[in-house]
Amino acid sequence: MSPNRRIAVYLTAAIASTCLDFFCHGLALPRNPIRRHWAPPPPQTTTAPANFRQYCSVWRSSSRDVLFLSSSVTDEVPSSVIGSDTSEDEDKEESNNTSQLPINATQGVPASSTGIATSSQAAQWHKQRRKEMLQKYSDRISPLERSSSSNVLGLSLLFLSNASLLAMAYLSGKAWNPLQIFLAAIFPGSMFSLWTLQILHDCLHGSLLPKPSSRPLPSLKHDNNNNNHVKKKKKLQSLLLFWGSMPSFFGYHLYLRHGHLSHHKSLGDPRSTSLRQLFDSDKSEFEDGDVLFAAHRMKLKGEAGPRFRIGKEKKEDLVLSISRTGFSHWKRGRPLRNAAIFAATFSFERFLLGINDLVVALTGTNYFFPNKPREFHKECANYCRWAVLVRGALWKWAGWKSLLFLYLAEILWSIPPHPACAMFVTNHGSATRDEDGDGYGDGCIPSSSTYAGKWYSLFTLGTNYHCEHHDFPTIPLHRLGKLREIAPEYYREGERDNVFEIMWKVFSEPEFYACMDVGVNLKNTKILPVAAS
Image (cartoon, rainbow, N blue to C red):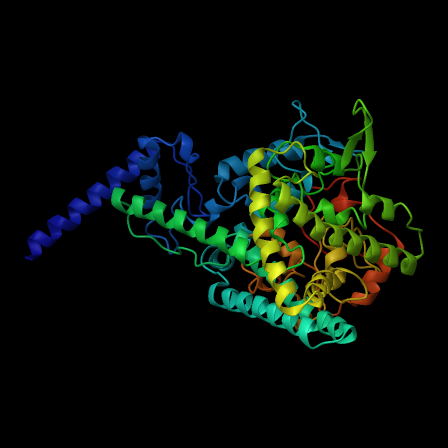
């Protein structure tokens, strides 16, 4: 190509780029220097001009080092959950509206003229922290959030965990006595069960499979291929969640599939986190799936559930809540008693849930959730039938003790004195000040992490970085610890948490779930030490 022709091509491209950029600005597309992408309207309302807007947005950001189309991994999680697909203006407007609302101290949620909040106050707190950290450390956090995935590591560990659980379950039925089964369930069985949960949890948030870190300039053909890629990825994620939850005694599929993403949005909201609301709801998703666990060990607002109508006219309510019944017998300042009650109620409920899987498999209905849509029950029945088939095969080939091992491996990491219990029972409390006098500043902190050293983080596979996860749900499990190095003012210092002291304190004095009694100070987002009083 001659020099003159090359110059003409360059000038034409520059003019076209300028015109297109001007036209995109004329469409009033929001700029977002932090997130570097624009989230289009939902697919059902998307029209041709909206697609062109998307192309303009990508064209404008094509000179940057990270390009994201609307079909990025963040679209696999509702924007209301992770808060990463809204524009900067939308975030600012929502944050301002929320911060200006009066706080009802008895409810712990912002009151509005409509009486309905888009997300809980605790969720807004995490969203505000995320925004501030991105403003300060975008160049270091953005690659973790958008490009990093656990991928090979996560898939390898998922295979290792499930294969090990299957092998040890078989050995439990064929060769091991009850004491050997119990010891193997404590370690490494409980660790592999927790790893399975954490890796599938990464899959749910779109952090297990590779993320698209860059895209070529858009075209209609590329957009169609992109949509096909996202559909295939979502299907693969669903398959991993389904089959990756086996073998198990009850497993984590129901919670992950229907209760975890909504947990990020409704965390600590008393209007949507009562047990009665959860069991009586007609929505496919649980309002907050973590309430099912917190009910065993924390104070909650609202009525208990599930409730069953009895009597000839079906007008009387029979409340069957194992968790709240056990919690009602806790005594203040009696940690050993309370821990024993918690372990008993949690283990008994888990055992009954495994039995309930058989009922759901036979009847096609989960009777604990009578008002949920038929699709919910069909999905539950489909999973339960395959899970019961796997358990039945294990019983036939290895004996009943194989299921005993799976049951113990599944519950032991959640109850004291297992070290992993420390992070499980403290992830959403109402912390204000620690025992050493170093605290969290002004306000209640709805989420916390457990820092007990690198081996503890490996043992829990990053589950202990719970506050970090709620700040950035799409950062994979093996990268969450980096956030403390990047933004130290937002997280506690140290690596010497005593897990047994943590459990002693939790079972001595139970707290409200996620600050639902006092609310959260949205202006206090940093976790800085304060002077001892």
